[in-house]
Length: 95
Image: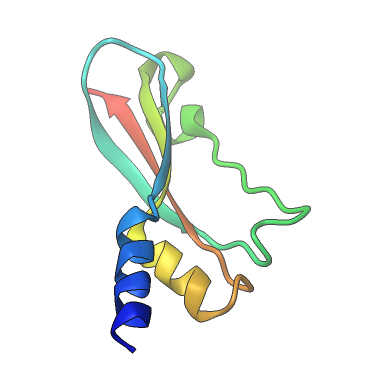
């Protein structure tokens, strides 16, 4: 039982979160939009689209776009056996 507990703890520690960042400008931006994207079955044959230029008021005002699978997103994935797999999306605009 102790070995199983240690295996579970080790698996949680070694599992990582995924983050993709697309930097459009060297200047720092402020967070303008944060949303959760809902996927099912690991996003199989699904896609979500956010128009960053529309959020920031023009493509020249976009500083950075991030998409991340956080620990809580991974926990939801595990709890539903991979049926529900959310991700966080953030858009940063120039000041």
